[in-house]
Image (cartoon, rainbow, N blue to C red; front, side):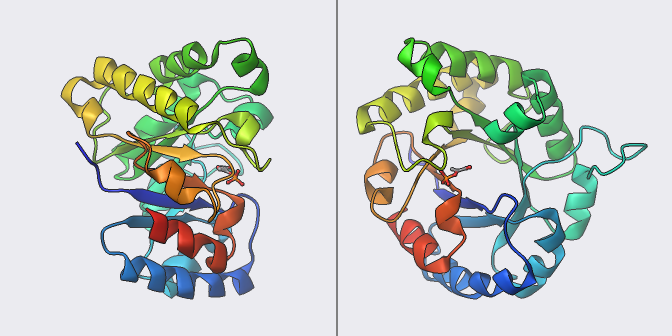
Length: 245
Ligand code: PEP
């Protein structure tokens, strides 16, 4: 089953209010490609102005807390994101799994909080270079899925992003055959975890997606879009990726 493609930009800790001007062209590109869902996940500080500036774009966040509210200084809940106008939230990005030591269980709790708040959770998984070199990539990703996929996830509320850690921000990507093998394994694992809904959950590829490789990656079976870091910061780079989807 061909699923509607999603191209989501992750601005990470980049962008100020002046950077929001990039959204004008991205919004226009999204409008020009109505068959593709387009989202931008800026830093928390830009969510409200981004929704005001680009009403046609889906705006997302890059993290949320597991709780609705409470004594968690410096944290943001999924309800707050929803209230600010966000529609998506990335959970379990490898940079947070590394820097904030997020476990699979915590990632699952965040995804559950996001879904309960009415957001779509973009849940990231992916192996390190050492794990791939050791022939463990498939097992590692299956394990991450088993530990972090919320059992109530559906095609409407959950997206999985396969992001090999060694491909993020490096300019390197897995071979098309390796992407195909991994996405097929993720699809099969989702089928086991979510029954029929597993076929409806979109699986994005992420890691050094750029205009020159987007079409090739999007054509791989079970690649239902892309999660894009560096190339989402400039509309001139992001637009061709939307077009490729
Ligand atoms: C990311 O961090 O989600 C990502 C895919 O980054 P990049 O596209 O820059 O590799």
